[in-house]
Length: 185
Ligand SMILES: C[S@@+](CC[C@H](N)C(=O)[O-])C[C@H]1O[C@@H](n2cnc3c(N)ncnc32)[C@H](O)[C@@H]1O
Image 1 (tube, rainbow, N blue to C red):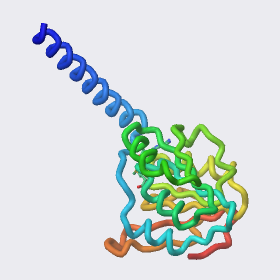
Image 2: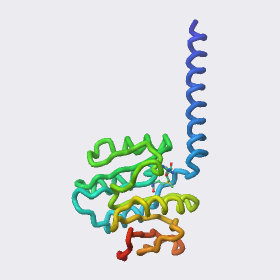
Image 3: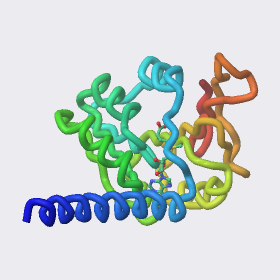
């Protein structure tokens, strides 16, 4: 009886582990953008340089483990910080990291499927292949003056309003876009 119970436990744990691994694999195939965190300097730069009035909304497109969003939420306690994430592992980390931050919402949704018109400032560290589709969406939905910060990847047609050079690699930048133009870093 003891051996049978032991085998049952091993089998259950094994099945659970296989399901978790499959789920992780599926989310990578579906999303095609791996979970890699933005470098520390980007977070520090945004925390120091963003100007956000009380009541503004910041949206992170694919928030990963939300370390950037959590830093912004702490710096701007009267700003609403919304992170969209679809992959289960970073989503779990993001929810754990932000559970005490009342101005943060971590939402399990594909950001292409939600309206983004509420955003005053957006941030994304994505991948080149999604930038054309994202540009179309943001051009349709954002209000004039809303700002989008993109680490590494540029939009194909939207004119750049400014950029910050990566202190560790001068070929990489944090790109700044403004709906309607008229802003420089
Ligand atoms: C390169 S990581 C960046 C994570 C975080 N933004 C950071 O800078 O540390 C990109 C994240 O976006 C998520 N992602 C990719 N496409 C997405 C989509 N359409 N909707 C929501 N999340 C998405 C991925 O799961 C991944 O965690």
